[in-house]
Image 1 (cartoon, one colour):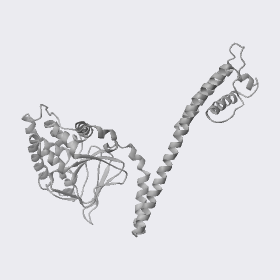
Image 2 (cartoon, one colour; image 1 turned 30 degrees about the vertical axis):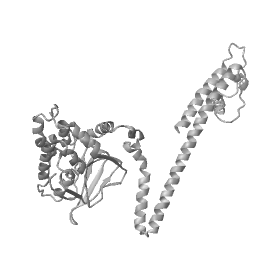
Image 3 (cartoon, one colour; image 1 turned 120 degrees about the horizontal axis):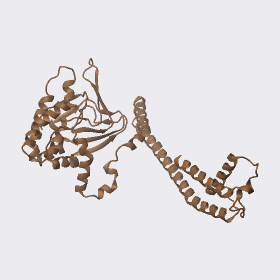
Image 4 (spheres, one colour; image 1 turned 90 degrees about the vertical axis):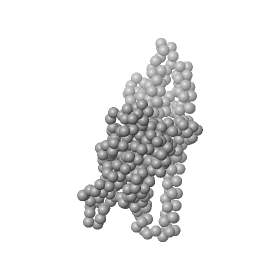
Length: 382
């Protein structure tokens, strides 16, 4: 559509120029096309404009027109327009052909995938009810795949990044993931004490994933070994503690996090998956890699150990309301509680000058996820 509008506007200006040349008799010594094509009472302004536009369009397409140049100036203008149209129209046709071919390729791939899916389900004698569920979900995913194009470009899709040395890649990842990580008070204080530690975490322990609508992060009743940071989008979490209890539901939105207990406990299990409510960009922090990196930096290790102990004590505090004892493991404590725990754990290190000369005056800004999760987890120390 944009190309078509461009061609129409371009021909409008060419037609206006063609009519202007035709009306200018250059002192009355040159024959022009306008007096030859129109009588004094022949048509009106609209007819003259459409005739000029018609002539302009014939220069871009293999079409004929009764209006022709009648003097050297009009002939020169016509030749220039023809040369310009030769390049412009060829490019226009090439772009249209490429777009149609791409659409046909996408459509044929879609049909091929649907055929393979039906064959797979048929050969394994999957029930009709489950087949309908699968087909319905696949159709919904294909319908909303366009929204995935608006998400962040992933590192593995950029071939040029593979040519960069590891040091530059580490700097890129630190600047790309650091602002999201530093929303959490622990990483805010870690950055104040040792920027190199946080840079290593961003480079070695963080992966970025995207979810389309209704896609799931983690499987239900499974062990989780990664902390979740929301960069864009929203995911929901819901489960029922028992048959008689209502279903707990919650959401994790941008700049919120969950599954922090995976960093400090030996085992963390969830009873339901996180489901994307719209297209999402998510950072996953590996617990095992994070622990390895933490042990390499003595100036932050004691602070991490202190925070781990305080964090586990806080999430093990009983709650009278059903389900809230579980949600602390997956959703964690509120932001204010996490900030206070981090301040108590790391403030002594900062006060003693281990912060590489930087001073922390205020805590970071951010929000803790208000998810009500389901989990059975072990509260063993980091």
